[in-house]
Length: 417
Image (tube, rainbow, N blue to C red; front, side, top):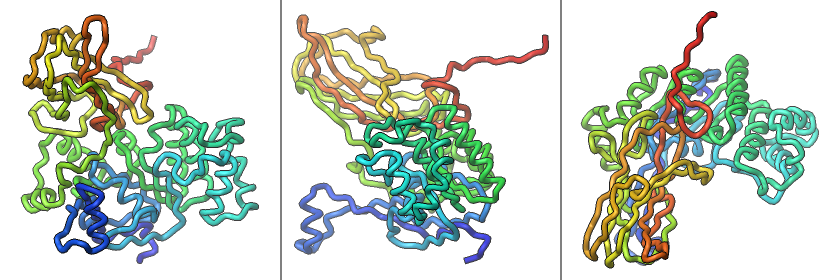
């Protein structure tokens, strides 16, 4: 491996076996069946690239494209099914929120635990402790168990530790998106320092402004395959085409993607549901203005959220609802047919309704979970017929994030007076 190469990925594949039932997994493991009981899902398929020492490289792609999977393989959290990864230098990684932290230990104890796992002596950690605590800026909470921390405190401590152990290669997933705007600014300022010091940075983000600003090069993944790599502007332009369904891949790539696609029953989001059963939400999905099903939208783009409901018993006036939450569980926004005065009619058993919510998405770039409900009043009693929480995951990709949950679309001018 060339000394000028920090990370080398060759023909990397990651395949998962998906089973319809747990007993199928057991029967196959015990060789009690001749016929395979699983379906294969290719999370990564024949991905190759090199990252030079001192480069800042971003990985972008829609949900399920393999971004986080490839970072986990590079850092050793996951094993590849086939292919090769070579790393030249000390890696510090900030992947899933709080990964590597013992929730029962205090923040201070976790600093020493993680530092020791990376290979530092207690004396070396002592020497770095002041810088770690100053960057994290969580005060006396460092003496409290990390299970009591907010997600913002988690990421502050984790990032402070990651950047203060003198890494040669820094790998960061979307974890920074949970920090407040001031902490994110401090983190990106640290990125600039690392770049000036000639260190290698590899990170995943849905914030296209950060990708364009900090990256020397961008790798675009789609459905587990490398769609391309190159200058940020070129890759971001292709990514936008992918998001709106206007990118035409070569025919052989399209066929390979179809072959590698997960089966229809493979779900990324596990929904919580309950209700009386008088009505049942049977299908939910999102489409773009051309009617194509999507799981990611550009900020400012119009999309339509669909829910299909089967009426099982007569109901006087069902209310159909939609809400958005962020990954921390904060309910951001939502509406229903009663608020919108869109439908206030009784429904008979056997009827089937499709409800659509069409809107311009001005939420900040990031990941959101969509929940659905069918409720109503029977006399004076409020009744839940069916609620489906966290049923869909939607990615909002942004070229410009502002403060808060959504963009006010301000028109800003500055002039001499």
